[in-house]
Length: 477
Image (cartoon, rainbow, N blue to C red; front, side):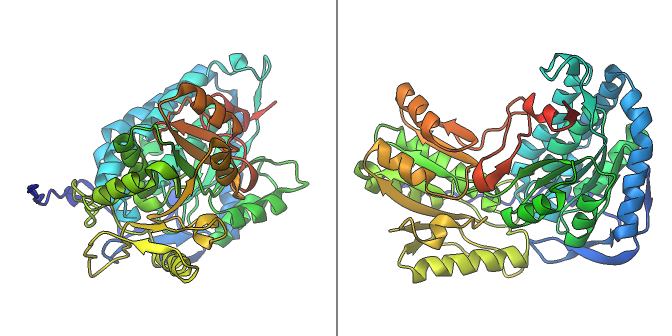
């Protein structure tokens, strides 16, 4: 009989974070009041209010863009090596304050502290280090001998990786000589505001980075501002369409990183235990709040039964609960709104005839929670196989041949990512060539590196972030 080991609680201390009762907007190097009504940001694991946050009205957005415009001339005129010093300083400060930032991210977002600490924060620092290295080498990046910055960059980021998405956008923008006005998601503004403190601590010139908090109207005002030269957005496909319509005909540069419905494809020769870990990481990492999540499992028929049995055993070992506990695997859903969407789509899956399964899982009484869930007997026409759920929900489909796997994997309006599990290198290359996805992982999933570009096709958006490709969006080439 297999022994069952219980994990003793291992909570991370909240004492490393000093959350202010209220926060203003960060404009021209200082915190200022917003003209709009303030809003609350809450801890999704407990529903407790963390802080009151200022809401930027159109006049506030205009003030931030003008501050960025004023700072653009002196900042872009600095030698690249001087801009690099600021980026290196920011990267080191992020490392020094990583424990504080990880706890703050977990409190505001709901993701497990283990992920904030071991994935998000190291990648945040790595992006600033990486682009600091490019700041004095732009003439050698392949965009001509004298690439120039675009100007003021408007950046709107989502709630699933608040600080990491900030780093993806701010680091290359500053390295190229642009200035920034960034709007974080309404439900997760606190680490962006902590980053404003880091900018002050690093001595970054006033106006180079400005942070305006608020909801959709704030983002819309920022995107539409006539003095913005570049718009970068990560979020839903629906909002991405609205932004594309707003920007059309204005001459503004635009990159969109939108939704996804990635296929994680397991062949009969794959190392199944390894594949199970990759499947779990692909869809249950960050509660499935990942645009490139492997939310569709395509498994070859001959190993379906064996793989599903192993996968169900593994799901039974996942620990759901307090995100600040270092043993937690599944944290809280980010908001009541997102939880309602997940519930709606899973109910649709059952109504359409798919078979639902979750491990025995006791959900906390307070907060927003959803158990790890998988659906079998899924048809390609089912909503759970076509729509982005953005939650810990896996849809399982089967295939017999490579051609069928490619056809099913590409049968989606999205094209952000995919995964391949097989021992054959030739099959990996063949599949990667045929899959219409911006990122294809082989025998792994959700691996990121600042030197590697990331982005999608079709309704997953266009443009790339990360690597040399991530510089192009912020240069006038």
